[in-house]
Image (cartoon, rainbow, N blue to C red; front, side, top):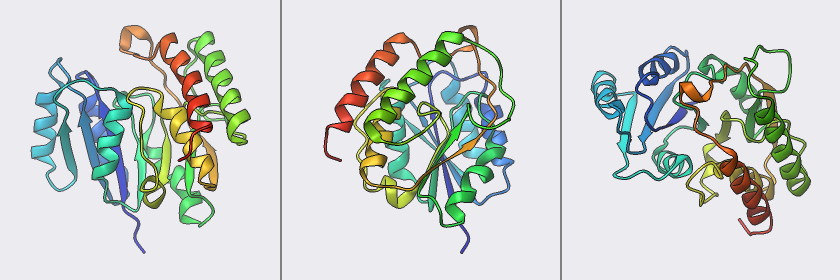
Length: 233
């Protein structure tokens, strides 16, 4: 059976990178659809997305939010539109390499996994050296999440999360911002999904390049770890 991949890209003010990341996804030799959810960009991104949807009408689908809601809300919208057998999250910046979709897909295609996370801290793939305290924060949040989910993930906060569509169909996403990461991890664990990790490369960007996550999102993530691990799916 040919597997169709739904690539869901949440977008907010990514005028500098959106064309490039969509082209990189298009270049991946996998049957796919690209679902872009624009979370009310104000920097010209929306105009570029109109062009992309016109240029690739059979592959690229663009959905516009009429007010800014957050990454989790954009993913909720995108997941609902996905028609592929497998769904993956792709950020709109250039930090993650879509050519690694095949690496993420392998455990699913082999029949071993229901969910696959791409870890920035696993294996020998290259990654840009950036913020020490971001690294510490990521590892801390992953540790706390693992304590409650009883998973042994190395990178709970990674963008690259790939799911069988049937898994997502069982989950209601409630978080509107970056709390999506601990929420989905808790809910996947509660469903008893077979979770795999694969090492990926990472080209992180700094705040001058548009990085949006802050310490406030870290505090929200802690709350979400507690909330969704004690809440029924």
